[in-house]
Amino acid sequence: MEYAERFDDVHDALYRWDVWAAAYLIGGGCSDDSFMDFRAGVIASGRNWYERTAQDPDSLAEHPDVVEAANARGDEALFYEDVNYAAGKAFERLAGSSDAFNEAWAKYRPADGQGDEPTDMGEDFDFDDPEEMHRRLPRLARLFLAGRD
View 1 (tube, rainbow, N blue to C red):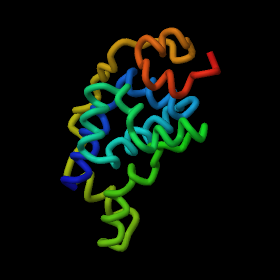
View 2 (view 1 turned 90 degrees about the vertical axis):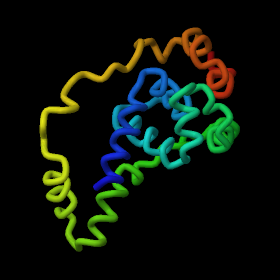
View 3 (view 1 turned 90 degrees about the horizontal axis):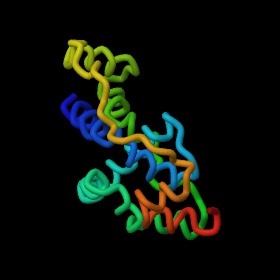
């Protein structure tokens, strides 16, 4: 339960427009669900990459998986859906029930209205505007928009 709570906290902290823009460039687009998976992938990359991304999403231009994806024109770098469910799957293995985690989570962290307030995602901007993306995320834009502008 503590892991799940901490994961939610760090996952939510990456819910920002600038991080979403980075995911958009890396993935060649990025839906709401894909953005959840991207943030999970950043977390799975370890504390160093998490902190670098939280500080400066453009630093992902140096992430080995991102560089590889840019060179191969792939879009799989850092989109790891399964990481979102790690706590629930681990709990299920221990408890033997897929419903056990949700029941335990409801007891551990009862709905108290927290988290109902809108998240400050920073300044919204147009991810489809190449000039804006080059201005805000210059290194990632060079990797993923070269030849497409």
